[in-house]
Image (cartoon, rainbow, N blue to C red; front, side):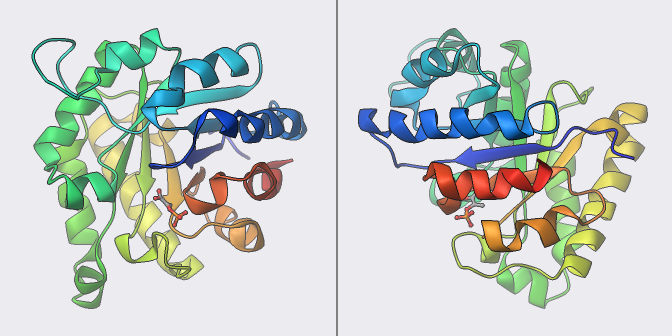
Length: 250
Ligand code: PEP
């Protein structure tokens, strides 16, 4: 009874050199098994977006960026715009990843501007939200995620230009995951918020789970109601690991 096509997205973070194209080719080869059933996305570092997009052209694997700046061009040394990512062949961009929020001090308002910039450039934004360990232990997880959704999602978002990723900060790169019941509770909460704000479109927005997803836990996590795929960090760097997750949908 799936109406939302699942997405399995890989966030390579600051990893990958030109030679890593071999992993992309491995993912492309394995992607055929899930073709038509799930969408695959690889988000390499910005230096590889153009070459990866060229390599993946005509395949079922999409290429995305890991962040973008809100302005289209100008005196913003070191930044890359959504338009530049689109020009390089990207179709998606991750915004508001917890590492951006924590290390680079991005606020909800910054994330919202980036999501708007992505839409302006014709990219699908993957907006990340998630609570810290302290916030969960203080029973504030849904409050925090609710605030992040309110502040980070752009007005008038549509399922065709927005994906939400729930990534509890304490589950990223730690090997820890919430229980399926906790994931269900949060994804249901996010779905309600999306439906309240974006009406019918909110029902169609994909909500990904991220945080220590690997082949051995993917089936259980992806089976949770309102989990429409995964955002994968560490296990997206090797084609076999990534395909082990994607093949849940084969
Ligand atoms: C991430 O950083 O988006 C992520 C989910 O990382 P990992 O899969 O390594 O926990």
